[in-house]
Length: 196
Image (cartoon, rainbow, N blue to C red; front, side):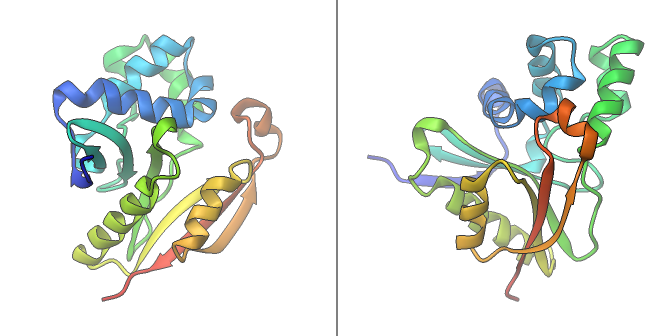
């Protein structure tokens, strides 16, 4: 059996696979921004930024990805300009409004993660742990002091992984009435100190 290798980016041939993993993991949050699921998947697929993704592979199969913010853009560029390339003005306005509430601001001294996704068949094999280790190494190389992420309260498995890896809660909040749109109410921001 091949070992898991963590690298940066993905090829154009792998774009659909990465989009599928990303959509599977975050569709409850992303879906309200689009008229239908195929449109949402297509927009995410087109907006994925290979330079903002760490990828876990076994052989030539992608098992998981971890996105991160850099220069104000996350793993999927869902800015107005990008949305307008794929959507009409009204559809882009809807997506922009809905998705803007999910973006995470830059944090000086932190590498802010933009989604950790592991294939459902590969969960429990250490893929998430390996991706988090690679993110920590990236943060260290970039001179960041922490790795920061957010986890929704309805995802205790992910939170348990982050806690096992040493992440600690630093902030929490609720989205109130918008929970009806996004399918979750509370979230917790967590940080991991990066060793220099």
